[in-house]
Each structure stands twice: as C-alpha cells, then as structure tokens.
Length: 480
Ligand SMILES: [Zn+2]
Ligand SMILES: [Zn+2]
Image (cartoon, rainbow, N blue to C red):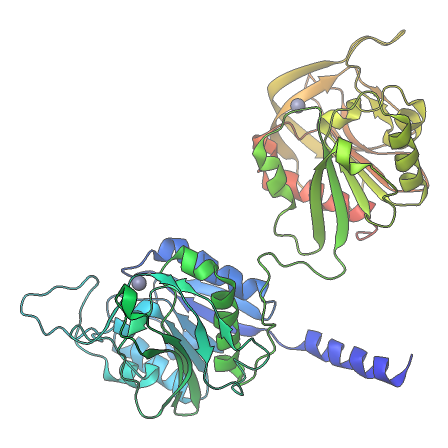
C-alpha cells in the first residue's frame, strides 16, 4: 500500500467514524403543506448520509432535557408559540453552541408577521412577538414591507464563496420557489446567498437576501427563505443547501457533498438485475427494491436483460418473469453467470421458467411448475387468495429470527421439487405443496426459490419484503 493510499484510507475511515449529526425537524403546523413537505426534508437529510434525523409534530412542551440529545434544530414551522419553558430551552440550546436552521414560513412565525392593516388577518396564527426568535433568525416578515413576485425558477448566487456552506458548490444554484423580498437583515447577520428579483414578474428589480447566518451566543443559526412546497423542496440545490446548512449549524463544518442523492446507495451495493416479462405483475413489486442502500437494483424485461455477457455487470439475478422456453443465446449467458459463482433468486411464477432446459430445472432452480402436463408429470395447479401460514424450516440466515408469515397468496400444487433441495419455508395449507421455499442443491453459486410473491398483499408485507431482501443478500454473499 503506497503512503498516499494509506493516508486516503485513514481519512476515509475517519470520515466513516464521524458521529452522526443529531437533528430534530420541528414541524406540525404551518400555512404551507407541511404534511407533504416534511418527509422531503427528512429524506434530503437522511440521503446526505451524515445525520440521525428525528421529527416532532408537537414541539410545545419540549424541555432542555429533550433538546440535550440534539445538535441542531431544523424549523419548518409557523404556528402557535411553544410556551415559555420550550422557548427558553431553544434560546439556551442555541446560545450554548448548538445549531438552528429556519425555513421559509418560519420568518413570520411567533408574531414575526407584523400586521399594520386594521382588520387584516394573514394566513396562519399571529401571536404576541417572541423577541428572541427575531434575534435568532436575524430578520422577520412584516406585512407592509415583505412579499414575493410570481413563483418561478431563478438563481441564488453565493455572495460569500468561502463560507463552508458555499465552498465546493457552484457559484449559484437554481430553486423553483417563492423569492421573498424586502427583508431587513439584522446588522449582526451575514448574507451568504442572494437572488435577483425580476421586476417583470412582480419583483423589486434588486438582489434579495435568500440565505443568511446569525451568531446567537456561541451558536450558529441560518435562515433560508426557500421551501414553499414539495416541488420547491425537490430541487437539487435546495436539498444540498438544507443538508449542508444543517451540518454547518450543528458543527461549524460542512462535509456533506454538494449533491444529495435522491436515493442513497452505498458504493459497494450489490448490483442486482431483476428480470421480468411474460407475466403481468402489480406495480408494488418494484417497491420491494427501494430504500435499501446496500441493494442497487435494476428491473429489466427478459429480452433486454440477457443481451450479452452479464458476469461483470451484476452480482445477483432475481427472476420474476415467465419464460418457458429459453433461447440458445440466453442459455449461454445464464450458464456462464451461474457457473461464475454469482447469486440467483427465483420468485413465485418464475419457477415455471426454462421447461426446455433440464440442466436449469434440475441443477439450478431445483424445481418446476408444470404449465402443462409433461410425460408422467401432470399439470401443476394454482389457487389464488389463499390465507396461509408459512413457517421457516430449520436454521438459515435468510429466515433467522422470523416468526411465521401470515400471507394471502396464490398457492401452487403438484410441482416437481428436487429431492436434493434444502427446504427453507413450508406451509400446511391444503391447496399448496408443503415446501414453498428452498435452497437449491447447485454448488457453484447460491440459488434461492421463494414461492410466495403473487401480488401487492405480499409485495407490501414487511416480513415478506425482509425475506426477499435477505434472500438477495445471502445469494450475493452478503449474509452468512
Ligand atoms: Zn410560501
Ligand atoms: Zn401469481
């Protein structure tokens, strides 16, 4: 190992060893669509890979002790005051050196919305002013002054490229949002991002502050005027800025990358090709492969899946297709794949695949559903909507610690199952063969069959999802 590589490896392991930043998202009331948008904030932070994220929808009543387990608050809230004890705890939290990030509507929370028109009732709730909130966020909304032009796509320019939030990002990013105008930012604040407010669509014709920081005691706060709705929060620039702002507020540093992935995937995730075709399926099927950073799955129909040598591209094949007759080219590609020691998971109807390929049926998948009678073997039978209990058989990493599964499934009966297969799952249901899952006897690679998986009732079942996940990980050599 060269010295450079050793240093890089050491740095990488330090980065991994970083303690997660503990963030509390404060939500639960707003004159904006907080129920839709709060999950987007959670996701942006989680996918940034740096945070331990919690959310509260009822923050009033939180105490100093509640806040002690967090490094930063992300306030996505405009509603009633939180009460003296909670507000004092927030002030003390920030003053003591912790972080606060406030978004969009939070600029007019807590009486920030000064009403000067007699009888004017703005959306949201106006309460007596919480003066320290104003000091913490460095500016507040007033009815006479503030506003925004037509919601549009614009550029936010960093005015301080050396601020850790901006360092490493492009000189600007592009939100699709409301461009709040005419904030008077307190003198102790520092503006780090501005946007030109186009007069043609109701703007002021001037640069407007969009992101500013405030030093409050030993703490760091940061106000971002963006975040009107779900589409605004889906913007890549917004996601990166919120995640980086939260890290900065919590720690004073920024290590979060300038691009926050929409779905987190570990660099060494298993590369999984899910093969479909020849049989319809519920759209819920695809959701079984989402939100698993260690499984990078692609779904492809059979006719494009096996176009060439797939050994270098994939670690595991998941079959959910129905292809009775395999072509010669496919046989060649598949045989090379399984002989190279890769993983195979066969789900549900895919056990009817390759009836014309005895090697696959007898050696690899270890079973066959007879779509029609074949010689002495009668046609197999299926029965839908069966209420069944599936139990694990013996001890195996795939089923470890799993209680019996209660499923509403399509059962199969009169299948051929290799006597050399190792049973993994069984059921007593009269409409089903007893064994409903097995490990194939094939020795060069790990092959699993799971018979359940007909429709959404199983696809969405948490225990079924775990079963499929573990089968993939085990077949790919990641679960032992
Ligand atoms: Zn708005
Ligand atoms: Zn089915």
